[in-house]
Length: 379
Ligand code: FAD
Image (cartoon, rainbow, N blue to C red; front, top):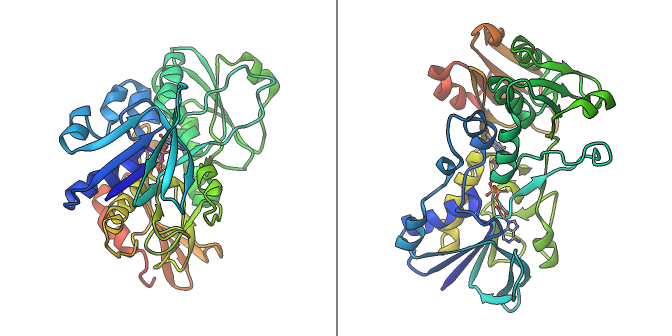
């Protein structure tokens, strides 16, 4: 039996790892459009950008692992079409060359997402969209002391880039259309603490405004961090159901029973949350990779794990568990000191109808398990 995996990111690589770890001994092939060993992206906006580590350190496995575990890794090869009826797919080398056909018994789509583009092209020759090791290398080279860095968007990536850039001695200006960074996710009080943190570290944080022409023109480098778009083209071509991502059921199966989808590209009918959700986080790529491996090899497991993510900015570390639903929350309970710029630590709980739907801590690692376990409990 052949299991083919499209996408050599964290989700695809984890699924291959777990197939072998769980004892599956049939053929496994990964098609990876990037000409790299599969790697994790979070360090690209943190320790690798700051310069504390090199990009190689983010690899999921070294090259030997794929050989020793008999996982065929086709680097620099893109899957361009799928024929679900014939159970075949067509591949092409990204650098050009002949296309090849591959048959499969089960297929996993882990095509991830790409950075959302912003129309600054007419004003800025070549903005950085931080997604790949190449983007990271270009940005890292530009982050020299005194360099003028303009960041469009105060989301997670924009703020992490700001933190890395300040630590490398660059001058940073951020433009954010919202009144506060991360306002939609964190609410006004915690969002304010992030704004204070960045201003404390010397970032020129301009809120409720789009980019300013003069700043753009004067910038040495412009970084755009305004979200990601799931890479669904292949699934659309194959006729799979789509809902803001590739639609998968509780078991991570698409509308075709032999095709699964996981990671940034998948919108899952989540059995615990009771709604469809697409999660763009490191932890989801890993946890869905494990369950998909089990099911690709003949299992029938539901993916019930709740979303989790983390960020590191300057000395701040935070973790966030759970998910606020489309109906929002009734209140946020905050315990501790919101002044994270001055070493403060706190916990926060988003409560809807007397139940915690999401919870986070900042700089309070001892509380991590308790904060996680509070999600879904009465409060
Ligand atoms: P991806 O990592 O996007 O990998 C998909 C791969 O598939 C890509 O290599 C792509 O080239 C390939 N591909 C696509 N189409 C094809 C095709 N047709 N044929 C062959 N290959 C194809 N999450 C957190 O929780 N915390 C963080 O702090 C955090 N920091 C981040 C920092 C950065 C800079 C970025 C970009 C992301 C960060 N994330 C973070 C998000 C996390 O990295 C993603 O959720 C994770 O990478 C998703 O993994 P994936 O395998 O689903 O997709």
